Amino acid sequence: MRGRKLQVGEISVTLYVRHSKECSERKDNSGTVGCKCIRSVPYKDGKRESTSQWTWVKAEEEARRIVAGRSGAVLTPSKSGTYSVEKAIDEWIAERDQGGLHNTKAIYIGKKLLVWCQKSGSRAIR
Image 1: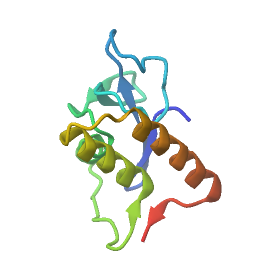
Image 2 (image 1 turned 30 degrees about the horizontal axis):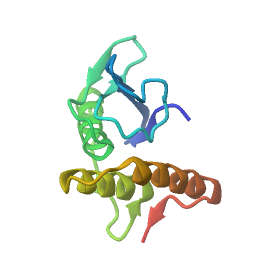
Image 3 (image 1 turned 90 degrees about the horizontal axis):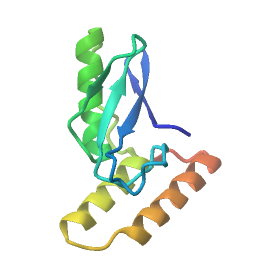
Image 4 (image 1 turned 180 degrees about the horizontal axis):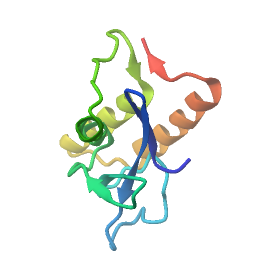
């Protein structure tokens, strides 16, 4: 899977990472990379807009605002009581980063968990 798919109203968009030349995860185009490279939203006209965010959670929120503003879509708040697996993993990694913990294994386990959840059809934590 390349990038991370988002649904903004009626519009489906994919969020990608714009890796720096020095990034160790440069060859990984999946939607689970844990690097601190900027996430961006590409458009069909070939242009791309930066979210100015490096964590998936914040980049997704910013991408939703960008796409909604560009298309005029109305953003509705997510249902309370549901929490996406991807968002939970991203927030866990971000929290570990803030605590100064080493995340190599955490990122690896997060990717494995995400793949398992996608195969089993689990998308949300209730």
